Amino acid sequence: MKKIICITCPTGCEMDVEYADGKITVSGNRCPRGASYAESEMKDPRRTVTAVIRSGSGKFQPVRTDRPLPRNLINGLLNSILKKSFPEFEPPGPPVHCGWLRS
Amino acid sequence: MKNISCDVAVIGAGGAGLSAAAAAAAAGAKTIVIDREESCGGVLCQCIHNGFGLRYFNEELTGPEYALRMEKCAREAGADIMLGETVSKVIRRSDNTFEATLFSGANGVTRLNARSFVFATGCRERTRANIAVPGDRSAGVYTAGSAQKLMNLSGMLPGKRAVIVGSGDIGLIMARRCRWSGIDVAAVVEILPEPSGLPRNIAQCLRDFDIPLLLSHRCARIIGRDRVEAVEIENMKTGERFNFQCDTVLFSVGLIPENELLKSMGIVMNTATGGPCVDASLQCAAGVFAAGNSLHVHDLVDFASLEARRAGKCAAEYASSGTLPVASVEVSCSKTLKYAVPNRCIPGTSGEFFFRPTVSCARAVLRAMTGNREIARKLCISVRPAEMLTMKLEIPAGINNVGFELEECK
Ligand SMILES: Cc1cc2nc3c(=O)[nH]c(=O)nc-3n(C[C@H](O)[C@H](O)[C@H](O)COP(=O)(O)OP(=O)(O)OC[C@H]3O[C@@H](n4cnc5c(N)ncnc54)[C@H](O)[C@@H]3O)c2cc1C
Image (cartoon, rainbow over all chains, first blue to last red; front, side, top):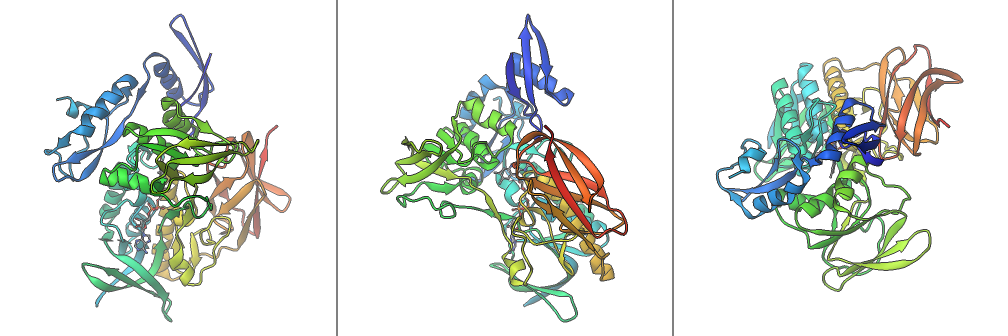
């Protein structure tokens, strides 16, 4: 059994998660989002990533991924945007989505 | 000198001030919001992480996204926003209207006349000096919020290896922000036996990165001639001392409501909150209203905005009618609650209260009493000082006091 804290909302439910034979049992969650977070946390943990990028004018702009990203891809994503500058992205521009940075 | 006039003036265009302005303008008042910064949002602009807006907008947003939404609400409701203007003084005239002095590099001095004022001036951080940490005066010592501002607004890194002092949410968020920017985090040290931030932030900001959280430990000394070289940490239980090598120390040791303008108007502060004493209209003197972090420190911007809506609406009502219902019911609270806001409420109305617990427990009952009679109760789950409690209450007519009690369920 594993104890995990739900990060979906500020309530932060402490959940007990049982993972046996591909079947997941969750307790301690106060809403269904807890159960789906626990399932994803056991099988394929993901996080929403936020950072700043350098825009064309040299100003820094906040960006976020438009969905939680597999945790093992986060460092790669951050490395690729930390080194780059994004001349085409000028404030007040649209928020940047994960697809946007694929190139 | 320029002269401008409005019904309701709001000082501060953060999550609270913008919401107050939206509510005041929606109620028909000519409303102006003033902020010394060049953009709206206050502290939200530097909080680039997600975790905002679930209650107010029913959606998880980042700080800047929340600020944009709230600015849109204020503008669409018809409020005017003046940026880059600092309010240096507010006085009450003999006819009970107000006059504020604003200054900016671009426009010089402006006189602003208003019928009522909402103060949503936010708070500032406690520093190393506030908690009197001895040692060298080396470079590399920051408050967590100023490091956050450097990193998120100017794209600068404060150092290479940090120790974070204090486990409040700002410290925790900064631990992750450091790691995501390539800065090593040696540890987060917390003087109390339990963390002061939200459990979700312990999980996603520390555990995800295996950053040690040292509870019941304090930062006893800063070492380093020019730049920080190490910090000395003391175990509060055993007295044992040891060093962490680092070049950066971030202090996240609490916030102080910023109320210099209100104090200069002679308004009495509540020692428990650091903000003014207010009634159910969030009024601290006739025509003077307060909301957001300058009233009491909020852990969630959503609550600051919700509270500010009330201040804005009441400020508009005061501006048009000159009076508000008398709040004759005194509010008090038990020792398990650090404070209750507001401090006075109106009999025969529905009210909303905010509390900061002093205790931690799995389950507790929050009771509203008048004398020995219980008028309402609410079950609270996972109570911690880090999280504000709220209660909606129908206040019976004909009473003159309400006492709130928080009692642990055994
Ligand atoms: C690091 C950090 C992380 C946080 N994380 C979360 C989170 O995940 N989720 C969440 O919901 N909340 C979070 N919060 C809390 C939330 O952001 C704040 O409670 C909220 O934004 C405060 O809003 P405010 O309008 O009261 O104050 P502020 O945002 O501080 O606004 C006050 C404004 O008043 C202006 N001002 C002050 N004095 C004057 C003057 N004399 N003249 C002109 N202008 C003046 C200032 O420039 C400022 O813009 C976090 C806060 C911090 C610092």
